[in-house]
Image (cartoon, rainbow over all chains, first blue to last red; front, side):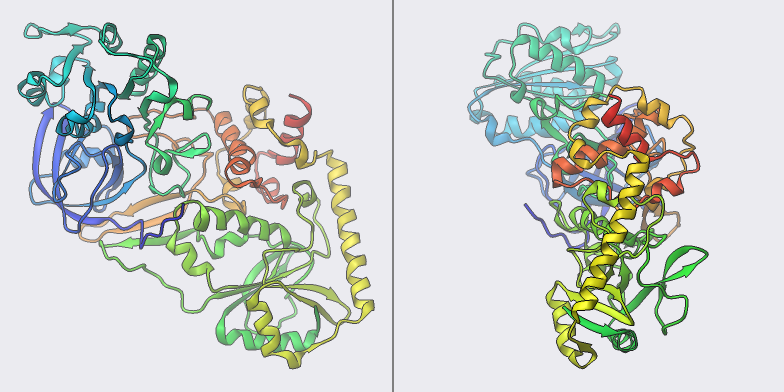
Length: 276
Length: 341
């Protein structure tokens, strides 16, 4: 397939309309692009901080909302450090969307298990909005999420006040290390995958989180009986140009930026060192 | 096929200057460099052997601005298209890889296409070799057979002038008064010359015992865990010269110029041999060791490109051999992968 783009390296101007502190190291910025930009859940954008540079992020908001986009960002590098200094009214740039998102229509009528870890909750939230908004189209929905401590649990109030109360979603959370107020499970996310009441043979599993969490979750899901082609992973590489030219995010015969970031496990399992 | 005398060829170039920025190789201390053509000076050498710099530098520039201040237009449009004279067959193959990357691999790059689309490539047969030439290994003949507009073969007091595109054909018709029919003796002169250069490249290949590309299938997979990589990368100083000098290497870095009130995004040639090439902001690096990056360089050329584009991304030009301060020799690495694993 061939796509023509006017200037793929040009960011669209966007204004920060709100900054939400999620955890001590994670913020969600709400941006209003000055030109229309739509995305499918799972696709990513490049966020420009003028004069500093850009970095790839998967929006965490509803893809059906066209005028506002939310991006949840952990403070880890030179761009994200500046993101954390942003305030309402600041101008940033947005480029994209890039890559291929989740093939939602392929999941229709199926039982779906979503597994999220840490900062991986961000793209997962966008996906969960899709699932929950269209929950009648899917047979059953399960969410299993884990993070290090209760303080680092992203979107906690939204999850507890909304998701946890829905009858069309079976939800369970875990933390590596609890505190006095934590009533949920303690342990890594793979410890709460057992006993998910669905047919593993035909079910869909979606995993997003740090590489080590995806590695062990995939291993666990395969042991449970999920098929390789039904396990969807969101791969993190150094995506830069977004159109498969700059070479930084190659994974085997693919570029994560244009062929991913979402891949089913069977597509990438034979490449060496996929989790590194 | 036509014949054009040297003096008529000068007239031809003179006319091309109206429509093109003409570049032509000049010889300086045994090296050849492209220089803007003004008039036919003594240092111009159309035949002989490839230029020092790879052809990609005309189209995929070492440094260019790709976005400014959220503006939608493409900065730095060129005035006239390039006409590049004296391009050798190895560099035409390099251009084939660049074309694939920037024009044909799913998305198009407007900056590359903008410079590439209207240009004129006037290639030429090699009439000599350097000891690092091994084009025949990669099925590239030392004389162009495809991917040119016009090809020149030096014969007595002129050139055999062969066209392989509509653009080339149109020029022959437009300047028909400059051309003559090719005499049989010129064709046999050309064939003898070609035969001589083939023999010289074959000698190079034999001397270095370089395996032919027919034996390259799966060499990366087979040798993936081999100690060849660590061994070969031992002296690498991570300078990236092999990447910048390579006619097929296309990786680039996008970076924003630091400025308070203005955003300028540049792209510059990048090198996969440099440590942070694939590193993500969180710190994870799929290739923390130098030998892993050397392996990655070979994987890209001899595994990725044949799988996605049915082409080995090496032209046998030998530039990386001469450029490497650590004497890492692509011929030797390939030889070890084929014979020692």
